[in-house]
Image 1 (cartoon, rainbow, N blue to C red):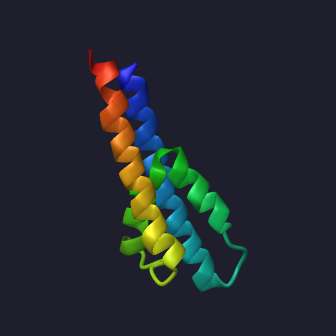
Image 2 (cartoon, rainbow, N blue to C red):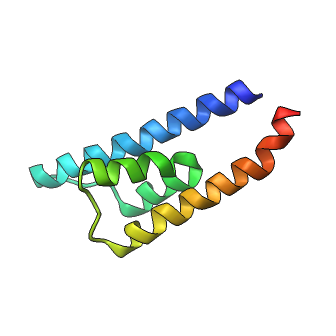
Length: 91
């Protein structure tokens, strides 16, 4: 179970990072964009770390307070849940 969970978190974290980079590229190209709700959904599904890294790596959405405050709060919640429920998987 732990291997599956680790693989899932790694994949969704990579997806969050990738979507932030892709959306920044699309913004520069003046083409259709990824919806903010989609970015937050990926973060809520476990990809907040990737979204947060992507935000600052690509300098994307760093002026939007929804993202500046929202992504770290989601990440803090995910860390709390992982620490709280993760013990059950280790035993």
